Length: 84
Picture 1: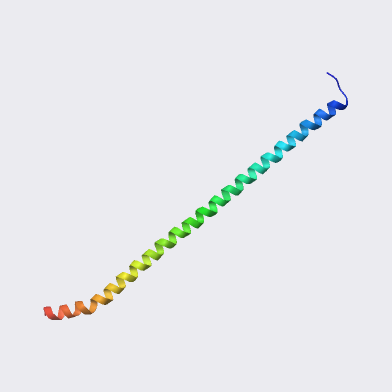
Picture 2: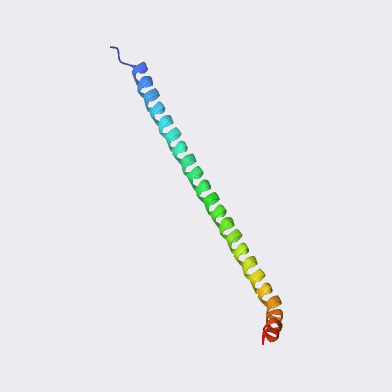
């Protein structure tokens, strides 16, 4: 083994390599976290959309039932009069 200027350069290169690895790993983790957040936000948006569709469907069905009841009530009353 020999020591000297080159030995310092080797240590510096190893340290720089470790720092580079650490930076790359930190960036990779940051990107993974961003992807997880984006997926969670998309899941929330999809859930809100799905629930809105269900609510709109239920309101439409309730309105249709109410309109049928209102339309049938006078006819039903007349029918009951005829039966008596």
